[in-house]
Image (cartoon, rainbow, N blue to C red; front, side, top):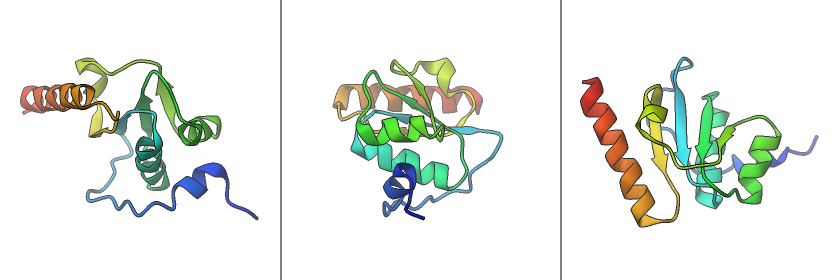
Amino acid sequence: MPPTPGQRIARDRTRLLAFPRPDRRAVVVGGGLLAARRAAALTRARTPVTVFAPHLCDDVFDLLAERLVTWEDRWPDLADLRDAWLVHAASGDAQVDARVCALAAAWQARAS
């Protein structure tokens, strides 16, 4: 049986460096090819993934169509990170990625 689009994307060389927690999701910020590869790798590890991006490339859309990820048509805010064990900023925009990193750092400091 040929691989689904989501499985095809998951052939990325991404390796997770932490153990996923089934009770917490991962957040991927960005809708491009890099975000698609990261989201696919996370779903392969059975991690719930939410993608935040105003636009999606075809590969992220395939993951969404296969119900492997959920999608928010916006950039995240602090509350969106409260149950995430991992936040990956891959928007392709340095300012957006820096804002996401600052939000994640703020949430981590608040949670500590």
